[in-house]
Length: 105
Image 1 (cartoon, rainbow, N blue to C red):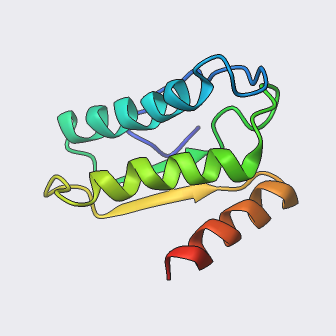
Image 2 (tube, rainbow, N blue to C red):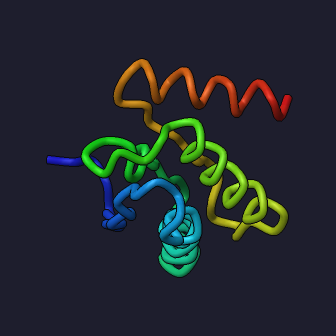
Image 3 (tube, one colour):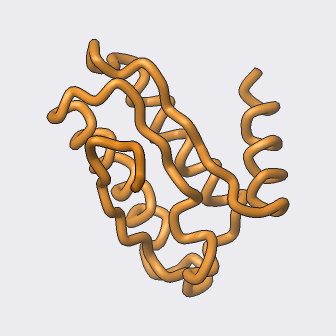
């Protein structure tokens, strides 16, 4: 019953302390999802906090990674993409996103 035409499933990395390529793997999840959105000419995309739940990725680090990927992508966005939403599923993730977004304004 999800009101979406497409669902891109991104399997994020398991946090192992930051020494096992986790940051690059997480960035790749966001990058590949944005590539798929461009290919499918979607108008909007929503991201949950990939890897921040059961995979234990630190929310602040994950938010920074996600924002850097999206910021680079927005330098030349596809014409169809008009909206990118980040979904915070708990207070800790929400606070992390607030810190990241305040830092860019």
